[in-house]
Amino acid sequence: MRAREAIDVLARNRGETVAVCALGMAANEWWAATKSEDSFYMHGAMGFAASFALGLALSLPQVPVWLINADGSLCMNLGCLLTEASQAAHNLKHFVVDNGVYQTVGALPMVNGGRTDYAAIARASGFPRAHTIEALDELERQIPAIVAEDGPSLTVLRVEPEKGFLRTPPMTYEGPEMKYRFGRALERRFGIKVFGPQGY
Amino acid sequence: MAMDVAERIHEQLTRCGITLAASLPDDWVAPLIERITADNQIRHVRVAREAEAVAICSGAFFGGVRAVALMGATGLLTCTGELATLNLRHQIPVFLIVSQRGSIDDHRIYQEVQGRRTIPLLQAYDFPYHIIDQPEDVTSIPDAFETCRMQKRPFVLFLTRRLVKGEGAS
Image (cartoon, each protein chain N blue to C red):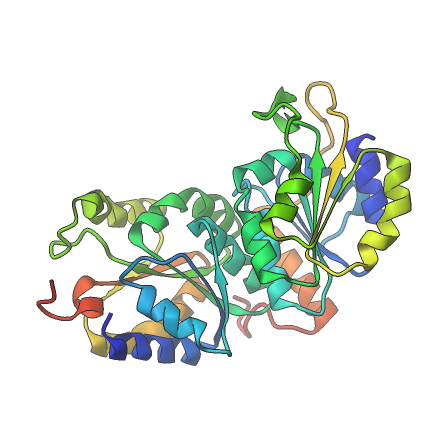
């Protein structure tokens, strides 16, 4: 299974979901597949898209929130799994694109060399549901049930590393513009006030 | 922390409209965290690393929820990278309440670097801060919170030893 194929399946099944993407490959591929402004694409704070997604999910408990994470980012903040499990946000689903390498910097290998079972770590952290999916047809078969189940759940998508750099271009806006596009998109969709009457 | 000070701070956080708190305790802010935990109007998230609290509050901002991160000075130092690359990068306000460890009356050798270098570090990042040293100044919290939102960046509210432990406490 290739990363882009897996992301395409998620994108087709996202429904009303709001997504938070880890920086790099996950964010770029999600942008390529969805062109969605009601998604937040991390540009930094590697490892902490998970925490950002949790804060969003707790603040909008009626809204399904998906975290599109990657194995490099997860490993930079494995403790996020303890926090997610303890908060038990029923509307939060955590996907991990696991290719075993730091793809964005040229596919250099990660520390664990494929020896780590992230779903087992999630279950041991207190996640009631965790899955590992190795093949595209398996993902197609399982995604309806994963979408339907209560969170928190963690789904590891085992994908092949690409050779060298992945050239998928990033989203076409950044920094403060991303803040305002994302915040305004959520205001429109959910009738909430992210910004005050003077715009800040 | 003297109970009345924790109570006063808690009252001001409620006045700010804060309904989510994320924390990793330092012993100076622990009584405030305990008060917040007991308040069923505030969702309290215990974290395993301080930068989680920063990112949780940042995510909550986009849900239209007012949030606070609570931690010690050492914890603040650990999340400067995330404060820069998430909050400074995207101009996302995050309000932090931090114990001002390493002050001249904090005779803990493992806090002395935090005392010397934390404020110069905040100045280097251009993160605003305010130091609360007296119980009467606790009422400045709503102004500090609004300034955080207006300046669209991390704002650190320091609590001094004199404030949380009282005058002359050992």
